Length: 402
Image (cartoon, rainbow, N blue to C red; front, side, top):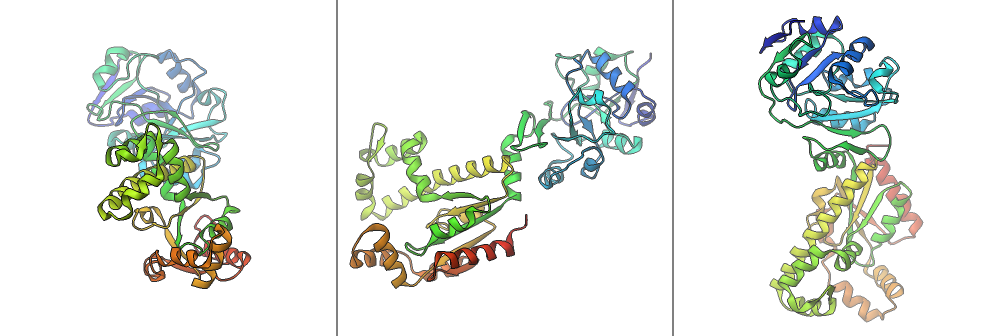
């Protein structure tokens, strides 16, 4: 067999593939060995030429996100959004396969990987052929992946029908494979697209609500009202206390700025408070350090939850705006109550006197601060049941996942 080489064109590669031939195609990652994915005989040739173990399934190249539903039985909304964001590009999404895909492609499984390569010539070949390509890397199984047409020819000249020479691959690293056939979503192969970018794109599809307000207003009750919706609940104050015990990075930063407040592995919160009590710069430094670490922890929690298929998250933070947490939120909610209601709640909650409760209240920002900044304001002078109804109504009006 004479292997044709098409320089910067697709030549008759689409016809060769439709007829059951094998053509090496360029992508942004590595060259792939493409055959008609709906032709079991052509797919068998791929396995034979590569020496690929038959237990390893093949992914399909498709021309656009619109093709996903043609080859996947179930396509989650999150998968569609990832395809819209990262395709064409180095992301392979694994989904339940349709029956039209030959069993040899799936290697006995029930899922299929779909990918849209970022190379104009291969996209043109896909469009012209009208069939998906089964296209693993164009190398002998276990060998280095080819980054140029010459790399392919050095191994397969005379063994395959053609090579589309589209120049050197720009990335030279295989696509990242993400299994979205079930939850939690899993990275099956780390590749050219970083896992953090995928997780952040999933987070962007979630609904994130910021809840804030003054002590005694009922932020915790508002959080509990959303718990039944399956939301990820993040109390930034509780998270900070956890980090003080467990985060070596936070302890290191605190020790550098406040050395006398950190002894060994322990942070002395009383000493820390004394140092910042009457020193505005020290307080600003403490807030900058703590807010940075809290936000890092919040972002990581959101990423994990998004990879689990989560759709709703709630951030509870008194310093929602000064910490920058509001930038993570789709909308923000201020929970407010009268001073008298708050005083009674604080006394009951903390077992303190009326005068001490009022001192705490008056040491905080004015209610107007939150009213000016938040998207919504919820009055919580009533019962917890009434608050729950208000929060559920707010969620119903805004929750885009229904």
